Image (cartoon, rainbow, N blue to C red; front, side):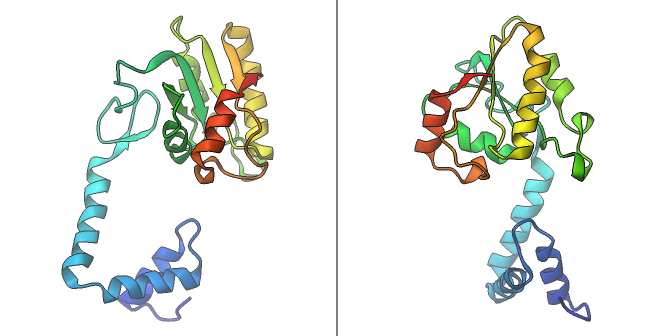
Length: 198
């Protein structure tokens, strides 16, 4: 992006490494930050530090949280008989906004992708299996409706069926090739209502 590394250039270069941020967007963000009043820019820096210091991962579901267990896992009103398995934290956040789902979550930390070197050992599959006590009666597979997400769902269903737990898959109300975090609540709600045994 820049040939020499001034502090603004270093900031833009660092922002460009973020997912979904191209070089032009990174430059715009860097100049936006530079043009903020000093107090606001420092407040942004403080918020980033605070998030890094306070936010970790729930030891049960692996969702991001400021407490362990997270607010979802520690909520006594949640249906502990249903675990919804998602790829990433953003997917759990999207589903949690849907009225009608009151179960727990399990974040895999990705999806099977052999071409990228991501196999079963790189995902939190063993942690999911360890959670399947007698209390859990259903596992909802809510991986993204793309090739890797489908492969992950198929792999998980083969592991889960012999354990005697009901395995369901969210309905195909979501467009193939899309990501859960970008779906609207109504579409996600229909997909969850129409889930089928897998």
